[in-house]
Image (cartoon, rainbow, N blue to C red):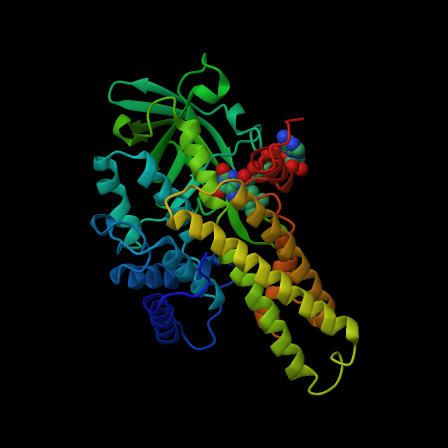
Length: 392
Ligand SMILES: Cc1cc2nc3c(=O)[nH]c(=O)nc-3n(C[C@H](O)[C@H](O)[C@H](O)COP(=O)(O)OP(=O)(O)OC[C@H]3O[C@@H](n4cnc5c(N)ncnc54)[C@H](O)[C@@H]3O)c2cc1C
């Protein structure tokens, strides 16, 4: 791997920074790396469309689908800069980080032409309807049914933990199309418009009092058969590709790196020349976090580099996922300890520092090792596919 980016890539980073300096209002801070506060959604929509108008949302996609034909490394730099600058999340992970790249591999030409341009323009936001109350790590146990009815499928069942389902225009849904086949072989992938009659979205507030995910109910939801992609009963392969993309995201690393940087700036401002800098453990803790954040960054770069070569990262992405989840917890813990009482203030408090992000991160970090496939499942992947160890 060549660690020096070419001049054109460095220029790309500079152009992005310039754009962000111009377009983000002074002092703007997106509330989370993956979710927008509901009151920030209108600005997030506008911001996404501005990026889309420049074709900067999915630069690595082919031009005919709204991209620029850039490399995956350049796409990753975009995600890194957006997260570092705390830009609105705009549902990017679920739309452009997960669903779009999966469609590029599994959808037909007609479907790509139908779905991808409105993602790249920032108009359509997607959510991911995989998990069910009885199917998380063991995703193939899902029970949501899709039954063929003329030119349509009728979908009935329930999804849960569906991030952004309350703000998304469409969902990438997995449903069982053949209940008699072995469980991995009877599943298909669909694109479903979220305003289709029969869909009910119910909020699930998380530990940080945020409405980021949902439960979604389907009652005889009529979906055109033309919205099935990747082949009937071949949804498991679509899902596998999807999860590999989800695990290669750099936004979490970039967000954590930025929090470390913000903590250092905050502490210097609060205690110029004195405490807590006179305590070795504080200096060492922050230095250690910087080292770990840089390691995470390189792991993410490696994943993007594999993607740039046309490979689908697998256990390599799992290594990055485990690292990022642990780093998120460590950074949040350090922030809470360093900020003392301030670290416990809600973002809405007039005395909150750093937009109350330390408390939110601390509460949300617990879900890092669960979302997108648990840390135990990632370790299983690393052990079996990466190290060649036998399955237990
Ligand atoms: C913030 C967040 C956002 C999410 N967003 C979405 C979304 O948008 N769409 C969506 O579909 N889902 C989403 N999820 C759901 C997520 O994918 C599941 O929570 C995850 O896959 C784990 O499934 P589960 O919760 O059912 O736990 P379970 O699978 O029941 O796991 C329970 C425990 O058992 C362990 N375990 C299970 N199987 C094994 C094994 N084989 N070996 C070792 N240990 C094992 C797990 O590691 C875990 O500790 C989200 C979750 C979170 C936390």
